[in-house]
Amino acid sequence: MDIGMDILAQTLAQGLLMGGTYALIALGMGLTFSVSGVVNFAHGDILSLGMFLAFACFNAFALDPYVSVVITLPVMLGLGALLYRGLLKPVVGSHTLMVIQLTLGITFVLQNGLLMTFGGLTHRVPSMIEAELILVGDTLVLRAALAVAFVVCVALAGLLYWMLMRTDLGRSIRAVHQNARAAALMGVNVNRVRMLTFAMGCGLLAIAAALLVPGTPLHPSQGLRYTVITLMVMVLGGMTNFLGILLGGLLFGITEALGTVYVSGTSGMIVPYAMFVLVLLLRPEGLLKGRAA
Amino acid sequence: MKPEFFSLVRSPWFWLAVAFVAAVPTWLPPYYLGIGVLTLIYIALALAWHIVGGLGGQISLAHSLFLGIGALLSSALFLKLGVNMWVGAALAAAFAAVMGAAIAWVDFRFKLGHLSFALITLAFAEIGELVALGWDFLGGASGLYLPADKGVLSAFQFGGAKGYFWLMLVLAVVCFLANVAILNSPLGYYLRAIRDNENAAQAVGIDMLRNKALAMAISAALTALVGTAYARYSSFVDPYLFASPAVVIDVVLIATIGGLGTPYGPLAAATLLVPFGEIIRGKLGGVAPGLHYFIYGALIILVIRTMPRGVVPTLQSLLTRRRAKRRAAAPAAPRVTA
Image 1 (cartoon, chains in turn brown, yellow):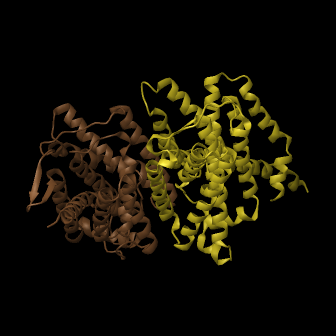
Image 2: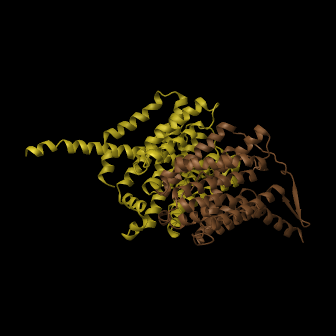
């Protein structure tokens, strides 16, 4: 294998691994959107909150982010449920723009709450596998943290799929997604399903946060970037299509990696955005059409 | 343009209010004068955005492109090619207008809908920021420094804060009048029809592309003009300020709190919130950075939950309802005797 191929393989692997995490983040939002029509512009900031919670756990108890997820997961689940009940529930079903503006408001509160609590400096959370590398074959070198993240994300996506297809909660989620009114007539507690889905989305973010924290510098203003990535992945996937969102996440991760390696400087960072605009214009319904959950 | 516009332009009260604001710099201490300039900048930006976001109901987050073009392009043209900044401002405004019309075309051609429009404009804004950070002609990540302001009017220099206060006041008045003019013109009626129901608007034969592109172009050109003036005022043309979507999200939130659909909403909200935020930042910035944004966020959540249409429209309909009630109560008595 020549050097060029090596770099390409390395880049693709890196992008694929990162894309898995993007997909997981976007799945939570996709599920919420499909049952309640909420486009959550605060998604990235909730993720950011999860990352800072992991940081706080490390600061207070010297917990590794992979361990502290035991604490952050229930906290974020509860927070998601509260957020939905207290703020989002009354605007569900009203104009999309109102929901966008409300969640933008939440963004400001979260981002600046973090800024006030943790200050404007960049933080790092060390982890036991932060510096570990995994060698695949002779040439492929992967960061262990990324590989762990990818494996967990794939496992969680599988679990989520199983939950949607095989459990009662999953069936009611799919029912609300297909037709909320009919689901209500069949005795599904629509509000409860919506709240649980939103809480679940926040729970996924707690896990994603733990996976992202090793090796990622934390700053209170990082949320918007994650929101933008999440929204793009979700739109790429066709908003509500489970498989589409997975594909969208991987595609975004790969184009991002390709752009960073093959296009110099900041113009490389434009590549995924340009890809997004192009896909949206050529296939406005996303990569995969259809409503399957 | 309809009588409403001319009655406002002819109204002595309107010009008296403008004259009153114009007299403010004569007695305001410098620190508060700076806040005044910033407030006028936000008023102008919120009103320029309102043409698309309020009258047309399209949450455009691409306005950071227009602000960035106004600030960075005109400054770069002046510094690198020696183009006079008045000419640069005009060029930037024209370029922003073309770009705005192009975005409206994309929206029309691909029938984006409200949500996709917000997302794609956000993607454009991110791309714009990355272009600004990566392109040396526009100053790259380190930004551009404009030479010291000597008050040479022909070089787009307006002297100290006082001069810029009046410049921004002119821009804010222009943006306000543009809103009132459009609100009461055919374009305004078309835009509102499009906002309320796109399919119905198209069905009755409203030219979607023409109206959307026109609104976007006007809004973009005004935003770019404010951008040039803001850049000259701050002298340091920071891409992280002018080309980042953050300022525009600020502007969108302020306009929404005030209420969309009437120019008085963004006007009132910016007039109250910007000085409030700046004073909090000045007093508590060291203790609690970000507190004023935290309060903005809490306010918008509160407003959306209690007055989903925004503060000013809610107050307006409260007033008209009370007036109607009074009117209904008054003639009721004579009717009985007659």
